[in-house]
Length: 202
Image (cartoon, rainbow, N blue to C red; front, side):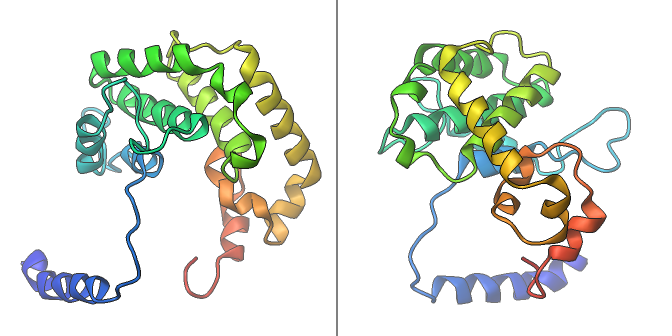
């Protein structure tokens, strides 16, 4: 009954968004993977994803080379972070081992590209988010990831530099650029961070 009541409002919002003519936003494998990792709050007998459609999207959008990301443009940063995020999401729910294996194979074969990529093309927050994903993979028991690859060393170094530049206490008190990469930050004080939320909810 609740869904039936909401449907006209949903249709109205969709129509308004379609009429905006403000361009398209392409799907993001990275963002989808993070949403796919959200567990149902009442998982019952076993943990389950809160948004199973996101898991289906991941399964349906793996590229032929085993990666996830922009199929039209190859960027090592894009492909590596998207692929690892999708592998982590599937691993979290013990799903699609063959797809995970193909993704990990892609990561093994292409990790060197991170050292060759132009630093200027690194997405904002990559040096925070990618190491965090690597740690999540390790915590989930993903063994077939090149954790010690030399191409990762400069990323880890950049992460340390950035984290030293913005002290943790300041990060919780005033808006900083690190807010863009909160998914890559462990042990956050969320009650304090929520004080930084804007009145529009962002």
